[in-house]
Amino acid sequence: MEHRPLSPYFGNILLEWSAPEHDTFELGPKSQVIITITLVLIIAWALYTDSPIMAITFILAGITGYLLHIAEPKIYHFAITSRGVLTHDEFYAFDTIQSFFIHTDAPLDGLLSLHTRGRLVSHVHVPLSDLDRATVRRLLREHLREEPHDPSMIDILEKFLHI
Image (spheres, rainbow, N blue to C red):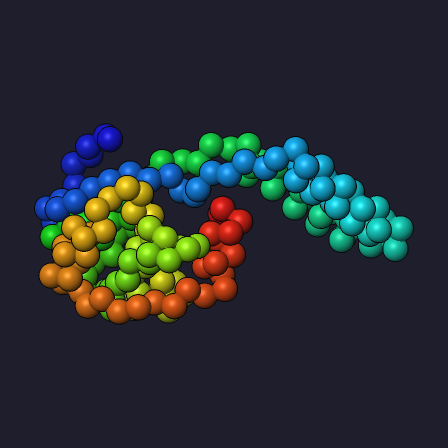
């Protein structure tokens, strides 16, 4: 892992790790054929019913899905510091985080959920990779309260679709 000097604003690094931006998955040949046939049928139906915008939308959805499938996930760096949590390119100071929760049940197993005071983004999810959950919990409990965060439908969809 590359070590970049942190600004004093972030504090001292207590724990740092790297994790891929999303889990990788492999579609089998049957799944690829089913998805391709389904997309072709939907696009054909859109063209048959004279809905070019729908056809363009599904063509773009297919291209986007294919590009996401073949792309290698980026590796992001994370850290718990003495002043907050550093998530790739964002820093969340402890005073801007209301609580945290470490998910242990599928499909969000191994995900750290931070409930922030943000209005637009109220929950931030951080993959813990193979980190010891007890160590993360101990470090965060010194500054934050642990409170269960029920996953939203969006959270489950993100994990299910690997995005």
